[in-house]
Amino acid sequence: MTLQAEETCNTETMDHAADTNGAAHIDLVETYGAHNYHPLPVVVSSADGVWVEDADGNRYMDMLAAYSAVNFGHCHPELIAAAKSQMDRVTLTSRAFHNDQLGPFCRDLADLCGMEMVLPMNTGAEGVETAIKTARKWGYTRKGIPSGRAKIIVCADNFHGRTTTIISFSTDPQCRSGFGPFTPGFEIIPYGNIEALRRSIDEHTAAFLVEPIQGEAGIIVPPDGFLRHARTLCCENRVLFIADEIQSGLGRTGFTFACEHEGVKPDMYILGKALGGGIMPVSAVVSTRDILGVFSPGDHGSTFGGNPLACAIARRVIALLKTNQYQDNAREQGEYLLKQLRAINTDKVKQIRGRGLWVGIEFHVTAGKAREYCTRLKDLGMLCKDTHEQTMRLAPPLCITREEIDWALERLRKVLI
Ligand SMILES: *Cc1c(COP(=O)(O)O)cnc(C)c1O
Image 1 (cartoon, rainbow, N blue to C red):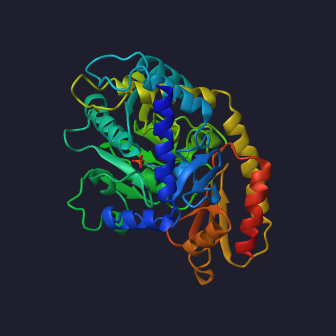
Image 2: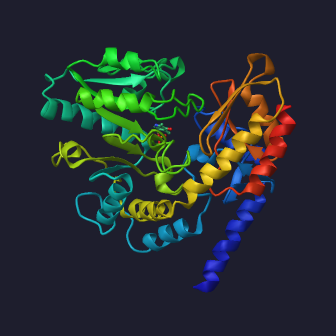
């Protein structure tokens, strides 16, 4: 049996060796994969911590961390161990039966959030869909909104996912173009504008759905006090405050939740990305007993939601967060990174924004597109991602060290100056 395992291993190694040409891999994806992404031409074949290696043996620092799904670093040994040990026991039961991981996961996540109940799903978009359904049902059954009239207020330049309902309230033409007809029931206000929120709230408003920091829009931090005032307005008008912390949450900004920067506790958290430790897609809506209590058996569900493999991994993610080590490091290294970046004397940069290890560098239009900077950084051994043409984001795994930040800064200075 050992011999067989070794043989399998060797065959695999040989398969990789026979095909180390990155260009061949890219060609396959271009030919057989739908062109719904435009990735940098690098083919990652292994990874560890903040580092990834391509099929040709080149090493890169990962400054995207899979859009913050890999907050704890690639192949974190404790997360991999949790996954492997659960895989040997049971991976999927569906919710038709109980499994012994779901209960502890819900308890631990509710506790981390200071909430009472959890509804597990898989992807972030499903978490957002779940929050929308929860808010609408709450609006009808608890607030007394007339049937079919519930309104949810959202912000311009939001990113909440890619489903038909979610793109219905996107303001990005590319996200919507060619995908209508759209779902009604949403009103869009400018991000950070408390007066617009006040004007928009009416007796049919069930919820205000907001990213505490807008990630895909380019790491947009709202004006000081916006979240706090929005929270107050929601309380006064019996409107649910829903924080989409799928990308901003779980340590990224230096706290477990970005809402903590303003001392705000939402009615509902939507979590995803890092919750699955970069191993499984795991998302969840976390809220109170009153709010998530609107669901009865058969109202909503997911075949894979709450599966034991996902729960076992997410429980270990929660345990890592409980140490506060990642939040502390994000705060400490993030402050240093921002300070050093702002000290760079360059006329190419229009603005540098950020919180914790989440930084957006916006270039002047005259200085070229962010993508060009990402390409140059790739050639220097660093993987970054542009967003909305002019902004480059930095979001490394939260385990990054001071030395590694300095290594990154050396390369950033080369392209920024
Ligand atoms: C990524 C993201 C989503 C969607 O998550 P998926 O897992 O890609 O469906 C939703 N909201 C925010 C804020 C995100 O960053």
